[in-house]
Length: 308
Length: 308
Image (cartoon, rainbow over all chains, first blue to last red; front, side, top):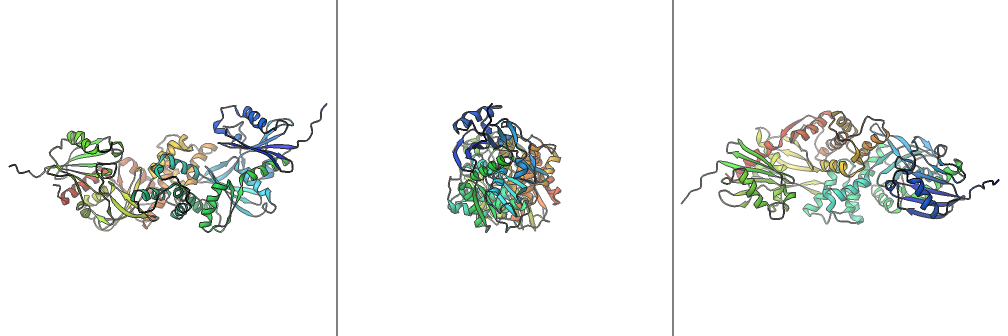
């Protein structure tokens, strides 16, 4: 009889709507391999997740003999199986205790539940995947498990979360990225020039004012084109306007003070624009890598949750 | 030699982006014929406006022997000819003095210029057509030419205008209607149910709060679907949210007091939703028919401007 040896590596996946970010990680946290696969849950046929996970993900990551832990939309009705949301406030330990074992055994597969919070306007809010990055960020450095942190995770659906003593207590979703894409492709503003000009971006941030009257402020991108009084109307202006409006009004929904520093977790490019806007508005902020935070969160949950 | 008789009727057209609203009007203001044609300027080929005006508009309105006055996007680069904007503040008399004669003679055609105002965020704002309805509303009843009025013209691009002693002094455009169409067709919210349920609409108005953080408040329409805690998420909720946010924040850009009554000019259906939202938010308001206001404005300008 063979006694299974304890695993030496863990396959960690952040399986979102668009992509899968896969990491083969040694027990000491070293990332041995990383790869991105283009089949997020929006591109999966019903029932297809398990097979795609086996081949190509597990195969190409050389991880057939290792357990795996997944977070993100893979735990939704579009993914592998529906893993019920856990309720805020929640810390990493409680989330790890709720890991869902979707494939049993020594090379098993676990899914991290998404979380649900009180939201705003009487409607609860939800996330799947960002909670792992946020709680992973907490574990990445000693000291973060204490105190109050305001975290921003930019994206198609940006998440703003309040973290207190290591627990996500409340969060709110802003569909800023989706609004930007929609306006760029389907509105009267689709004719603005493509651009990533920082000056135009800054003008957009300034035009966002207090974040109110967005439907009117957006029209300034059109007026800048029609009258020709300004040098140009471009995508960077529109981006600055939307991000500026978000930064100026969404954190207030979490009842945070305007002095509260902002922790940005995500990719360097989009995070960089958020950081630029926050700095322009006089808010202290810092960017942290989302992939590194996801790996830290998944590895710590694997350890606590008995995956290893 | 034949001496041309003074005209007995005027053909008035509000020629917008989507439709042409045509009215054959007697000199005493009685509307003898009215018809809507489906070729707004967005559906005209370059150079086509003059021919389409002759046939079918003039022909079907039985107005070959009468002068005509047109307002709206027909004076833009998509229309018949570009009529330069006039600058705010402007009253009906000044606008009438700037009528553009695009076809000369006793059966001539005149176009009302659009107007340009200071707008917001350093970008000027523009309108073509609504100015005629707004200034027409002023002429429809004695007394309106004095005092301060806050006018709202709902639509794809809603206009909020401040009228002082008969002049439009300032206005701002809110792309609320376009946002609604875009969200209904191209966003994650496209799966909300179609509905015109007044209760859902009211819930949306309430969820709009102070009109800030719109990108976050919009996501509540999604959260209501995902978690199933609320009875439904539907188009009426989304509409209430967008209109509520507009009403709660756009008038402030015109530095009006929250007590200022709102004059709604437009069609009864959309105007009715605006009225419902305004009343729910405790704002005094009244709806006035946009077509009647357009006819009044065009006829008065024709008289002052020498068309008749």
